[in-house]
Length: 252
Image 1 (spheres, one colour):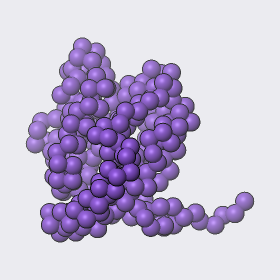
Image 2 (cartoon, rainbow, N blue to C red; image 1 turned 90 degrees about the horizontal axis):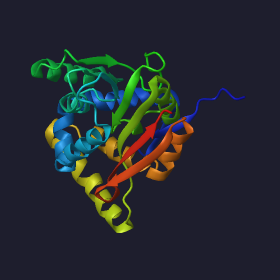
Image 3 (tube, rainbow, N blue to C red; image 1 turned 180 degrees about the horizontal axis):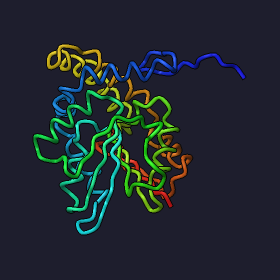
Image 4 (cartoon, rainbow, N blue to C red; image 1 turned 180 degrees about the vertical axis):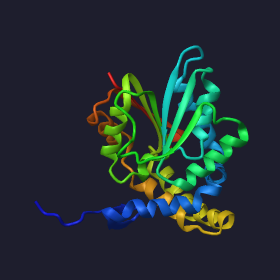
């Protein structure tokens, strides 16, 4: 077998496989401080409704222990929603590969008094530092497309979930109608980097984020990847005509 390095996509570019994660980390180190603010601007606030829909599907119990792993959730936006929706025995562990994003989440968590039921860790979705069968749920929102080896991340998700545990992924998708997709692309590739430059002083991270959306598999193809990782009762639901999709799977 050849030991030659593989090339992978980084947005619309092709880069060496070993270099990709460092480039992604650089994007989020630049975007971390304004990440949630930019989500509001990029989605006109719709990301809040999309995230609320995912938490409604998760439906953490009010009167029982419930332990969730939120991956790529460094700013705590999903984790804090889970804590609000669940009961006093709900716990969330965040694993994000970006120390800058984790730092932002810790600051927010300390300010809001959330750290008693919420743990922030720096960790790679492809090699999670948790035992098998640990969590009742695994959530990831707008993070899976930034993973170099998505198949490995999905297998790790399956590994750390308890039997009966649920996988939920909120991610950008592809719109159902070509004309709508073209209009959305025109907006994404012109407005989003421009706004990013105004807000943060650097539009390049947001150009990558937009490009990575277009490179991500369509919902049906991603559903097949989730099933291949070992999940059952796999399904997805498109929101806003396919701008995003919520993917669900169970470890049976």
